[in-house]
Structure formats: structure tokens, C-alpha cells
Amino acid sequence: MRTYRYPKKTEWKELTQRPTIQREELSDVVQNIFEAVQHKGDKALLEFSKKFEQADLETVVVSEIEIENAEKEISEELKVAILKAKENITRFHAAQKNEIEKIETVEGVTCWRESRAIEKVGIYIPGGNAPLFSTVLMLAIPAQLAGCREIILCTPPDQSGNINPAILYAAKLCGVSRIFKVGGAQAIAAMTFGTQSIPSVYKIFGPGNQYVTSAKEYTQRFGVAIDMPAGPSEVLVIADKNSIPEFCAADLLSQAEHGSDSQVVFIATDEEIFMETIKETENQLKALPRNEFAGESLKNSYFILLNNIEEALEFSNLYAPEHLILAVKSFENYIPKIQNAGSVFLGNYSCESAGDYASGTNHTLPTNGFSKNYSGVSLDSFVKKITFQHITENGLQNLGKTIEIMAEAEGLLAHKNAVSIRLKS
Image (cartoon, helix red, strand yellow):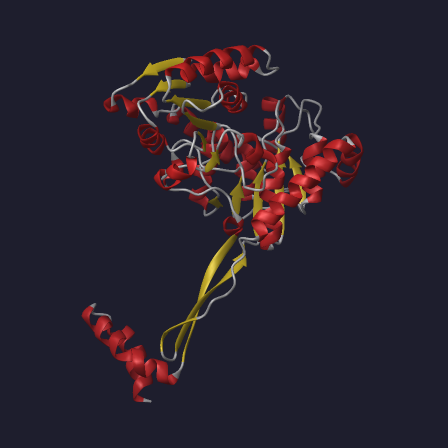
């Protein structure tokens, strides 16, 4: 881990850089995968599964029998936990529904907006050593609440060709239409073009590594929308003299263990807390089963000592973290100063893991500085807004002259005539 004591502001920009693979390398690999999937369909997917997951599959389709058996393979304790998380996530996202409000902008001119579900959505769920069944809840629940007609899920199989049973259980519980054994950039390509087995979708959701993120960016060239550029996970923790080093270290490692390309940043305003948190991080790391991943992540991470909380928040807004933990006294006073963050956790007991699993907020969030211009996933992510207007005869008389003058000034006389011909009648 790298430590910095009172770095100059001219050095801050360098400290906000994330570890990345060369974009040229990413683009070439993703383009080749997309071309293969577009032309060969399922055959390409099966070849990629063998190459990347070492899984020799006969089909990418998850059968109903596999889904039914999954429920028998997970413990009752885990089922109860998933159901509780589902309840909280549903409650939080259901509250985001808006009532239709009609506005009379001018007498006789009524305008309003209505939401319509995106009909076909695709969900990508990372697999491997950490199968994120929690992400199924975070994406499928708001999709179902929004009324999406078709919810497709893709996730990579293990070497035996199986999907983690908790992923299958959560998918069935949350109304996923169909599930497929395919991961990586090839999954994004499959949901973009469609294959013999996998239907194409209108919008793709879900986190992933840099190849998946690059593939999601690439898919937009083909008219498919994405939730956001959600890449490797990250957290920024701000601590003062009232913070608890043991807690701070645990939060840092909870993100570092996601993978070697994750990044964590710790900012302290107190020398003692700064040193104790570094020591605590090193001690807790040794006990983690995934300490190899977390250790690699820490090599690309920063521990920074700054003068005060205001300065720490200034750095945080420049960094624009996916997760921000404000483990300081009187955190309420600093909330208005937070400009860029995906999700914020306030106080010593608001651990980031709560948002990852069961508090109710969504954990699919913008990374790599994109919280400067993207929001995390919400109910609105699964709908589009359609505007409506109704103009009465009286309304056009009230508004018509304004339209005519503006249209003529732009030289668009057919626009003007569309009003004039009605006013003359």
C-alpha cells in the first residue's frame, strides 16, 4: 500500500488514477469477441466458455430442472437472508414510483410525463470465485417493479458447467425470465445481437471486470443502452480522530477482496488514526481467505493524511468514488459538501457491506470517476419517460402567436404554417 502525508493539491490528480489495462488491448479483444458472436452465435459462446471458463458445454441454456434443484442446494438460513434482503430492496425501490402530474403551462395547454418499462433488459452477473447473487436482487427487483416484460440473465459457469445455486434461486425469486451460462464480453455481445438461444435486449445492466465494462461501452454502437460504466469496485473512507481503525480497515478490505483491479483509498485527518488503520489493515489482511486478491488491490491503493475534513471531501469529490464512507463525528454537517459519489455511508456503524446486501439501496454504482456524471441503478433505470400534451382550441389561440414568431425567426415556415392553418380555421 502507498502512503502519502499531506500531498500538495498539484499531486491530487495523480492520486485519483485507477489501475487500468491499455484501452487498445481491451478494444481489440472486445471487437474480436463481438464479431465472433455476431457471426457464429451459440457456437462462438460455447467456444469461449471452453477457452475462458474451461467449461465444455453442450448448451448455454439453464434448464428448469437446474433452477428447481438450486433451491434444494442452498441452506434455509441463506434463503431467509435473501428473502429479508429482497424485502428491504423492494421497499426502497417501490417508493421511487412517481405519480403522474399534469401541468397546465398556458390555459388550454396541458403537458405531462408517463413512465413505460423498457420491454427487454439483460442482466450480467459476475461469477467465478465470488458469484454475486446479491446483484441479481439489485437488478431483477427494480426491473420487475418497473414492469419489464423480459428479463434475461447471463452469468459464467464453473468448470463443470454449473451456475452457483444462490444465483439461480435469487433469479427465480425475482422474476427473471431466462438464464444463460455465458460470461465476459461474449455475454454482452450475445445480449446485443441475440443468438440461437439468447434473445437480444434493449438495455444491459450489471458490473464486471474491465473487459465486461469495455464490452458494455462497445455495445452502444449497436443501439443497445447500458446502465453505466460499472467496472472494478472501489471505496474511499474518510476518518477523523473519532473513527475506529478496526472498522475502517474492515471496510477497506471488504472492497479490496473483490479483485486485484479493485482500489481503496483511506483519508485520515489524525496521525494516530492514520497509523493504526494501516496496521489494522495489514493484520486483518492476513486472516482473509481472499487475501491474495486483496493484497494485489492494496498495491494500487492509497492511504492519505490530510489537514481536515473539508480538504478530504475536496479530494473525494475529485476522485468521485463508487462508495464513500464518512466515518466522522457530526457527519450531518458535511453532507451538503458531497458532490460526487455513487453511494454514501454515514457514521462508524454504516458499513459499506450493508448497501452491498440488504439495507435496501442499490449496489450497482458508477466507478472509475463516473459518479461525476452517472447515478447508481434505481427504478428509473428500467423505464423511459414519454411526454404527452393536449392543446385545446383555446390553448392554441393563447400559444399560437408565440410559436409563429419563433418558427418564422428560425426560417421554418412549415412549422409556422402548422399553427397558422389551425388558427385560420
